[in-house]
Amino acid sequence: MANINPENPKYLEADSWLVVSVTGALIIGAIAGLILWALESAYVFH
Image 1 (cartoon, rainbow, N blue to C red):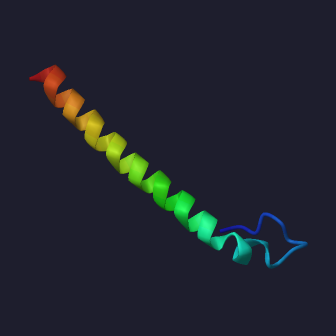
Image 2: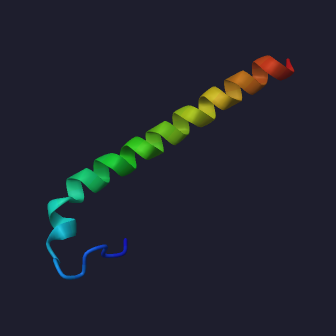
């Protein structure tokens, strides 16, 4: 991941837990969205 704030090298270290949790939430949300989309598509087309 690119360092957003090069002047402060500890920036990413301090916020690493936040980055991990946000990334995890986005991944979970994307998977849930795909599942819901697939279910809706199945109901619409069948």
